[in-house]
Image (cartoon, rainbow, N blue to C red):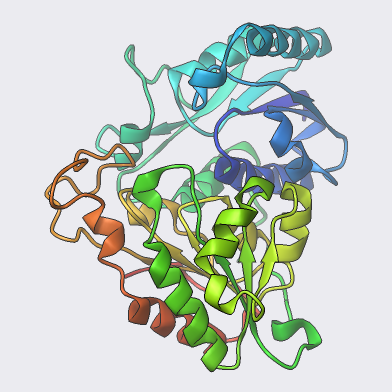
Amino acid sequence: MERLACLIVARYLGDGVIQSNFLRRLAERGYARRYVVWTRPQMAFFFEGIPDCTVVSSPFPIATIKQFRLRAALDFLRAAREISRQRPSVTIDMIGDARERLFARLAGSPRHAHIGWATDHPFNRLIRNPLGRAKPAITVPATMLNVYDAYYLMLEHLTPSAPGNVSRSIVSAKNRLRRNGKNHACVGLHPLASQRSKLWPFERWAILARELLRMDVEVTVFGAPQERTQLETIFSQIITQVSIVTDPLPGMARAVETIDVAVGLDSFFVHQAASDGTPSIVLMGGNHPAIWVPPNGNVLSGSGGCVHYPCFNKPKCLGSKTEFACIKSISVENVLDAVRSALAHPASKQTPSRVQ
């Protein structure tokens, strides 16, 4: 058993949700006596409730590098020193990027366990390893595309499960009663993202919401506090018929627990729904659809005729006739069909992820 394991979670909100599930399973299996998570301040609440786990927060010189100025750099170095003083026996990262390995050195542990990806694995398009992969704890084969499956492989390497284990997932199966005692099913929509290339046309979100209301389905729209005005504009014609939740992240996560189906973009929202055992429909733009589909998830995607698809959210179509054609190729009827299917099958147990 490790004395103190440090998990480095330096990237986006979706990564934070997924990796918090990984750490919960790792703790349940008794991998270490104590845990410390080094992550961004807004992600700290993901790790609440994990026994013997503390969180050290700071910005990182990665992902949001444009905001990483002097104050952020000082906070980052302070966090590294704080973790180093705790003398972790091992650091862990679930990305496999050279930058996370640098952060591990700053954390001062004698050993670092990181995930690795086969040379031809598409996840390599999302990371940087100019000097090679170093010595990963495991290497995920190119045939294992989904990140949830890859993380389970890492979990099994660090803490082999008992024979006969049927879970085979970092997300616990939950016997969640659909509709939570309500008379009507509730579908949650999450229309906004930080990258323009991920956005499904706003008018289609409004049409989708109207069609769901006609199906006698309650509609809850989710967004960040600063996005409320924009959401009210998108759904202005039915504003009195939908609920809009723009609470800070912890409140938003609690509200996600009340919905029966989640419809969102390639973002934190659908992974939070997966943590709650809620089926999701993911509208995927330029990213590789099979990598990020969550458990109980159904990814809708397509190239739309773009020769650069998938571009891994680094669009090469800007200013062309096929600009964001991939996300625009998803029709309202495609989404409605997926919602109908999800509502018709209770989310009482995990089902395989699907890519359409």
